[in-house]
Image (tube, rainbow, N blue to C red; front, side, top):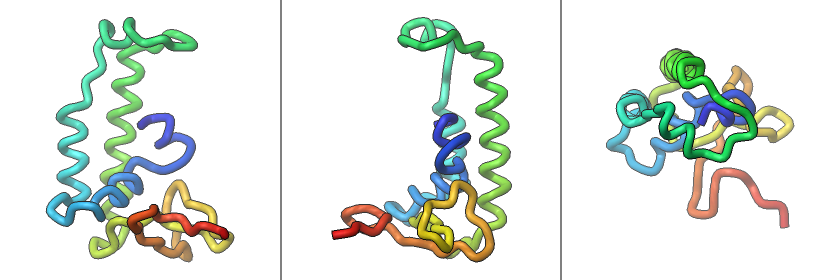
Length: 116
């Protein structure tokens, strides 16, 4: 999630997009559930085949920062627009939605248009 948050789709945007599948989940509730159940311990990290060692304390700090940023982003976007990604004028998924981006709602086959 942190790699995705840092490079492709902001955690707040990701959570808002996921809320379109179940209207009972609000972005804040989904973030609360993610925060409650996300546990990384040194033992769990030791079991993973990592390219380089990861400091669990640094990872926790990055995670907490991402949660804070996600909550802040959620408050800036329209509460009625859920279940979508935001596209730039060029049609590229915006990591962080900006004014002028358009919302692209999800569908059975996904949220991005398919070129045939």
